[in-house]
Length: 270
Image 1 (cartoon, rainbow, N blue to C red):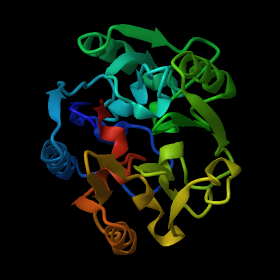
Image 2 (image 1 turned 120 degrees about the vertical axis):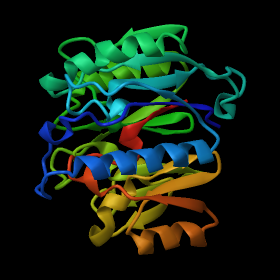
Image 3 (image 1 turned 135 degrees about the vertical axis):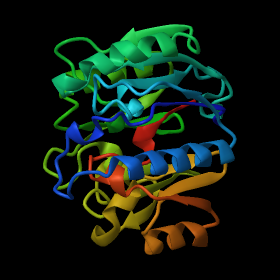
């Protein structure tokens, strides 16, 4: 269960941010409208939002998920219970140098909520978008933004709190910037996963909801307190979720898609 989320609106320089795809420049006014609808959806899921000011220094700063990973201390007697509240946050070290300052700006906010803050250290790099929590296990993507050194540092920190982890190398997977561009945990030992990753050995013991290539962007969905946020415009995937009993909330994300962003990227949830 989640109770809080940290969000930051896109700044006026949003269109100057990093992107690996060619979908045209984002419409800033429309991005603000989509961001507002996204925040409303989070509140509908029962979250209290900490709303940060737009940061004109960093065009990508609306994607706050990349700046930190949240951890809970697992009960030793029953590790899978996840009965405790989040106690520590790990500040990342983004793989894109232009985003380094975003971490410093988020650290003070996180210190209000977490008793411990740790940091990924050089030569490691890590983006939060490459980290997918699946109850007491974490999938860590090795990507163009997260290197092996950063992945190993995170795995060590996770192990100290009783979590297991596995690495998923996505460097050769086309059109996938971060691991969570193609993977989401839906609870109940179930994953949403794109076809290009579905046969990876790390996912063999999971029930998979496969996302075909035509709707690949939809794989970046977010389960929050009994709801699943999905990007609007992908009816086959949303229907597959509804057929499995999930209550979905669709949010238009076209302007964020143009900048390699998705639903999970726009908040830190805990």
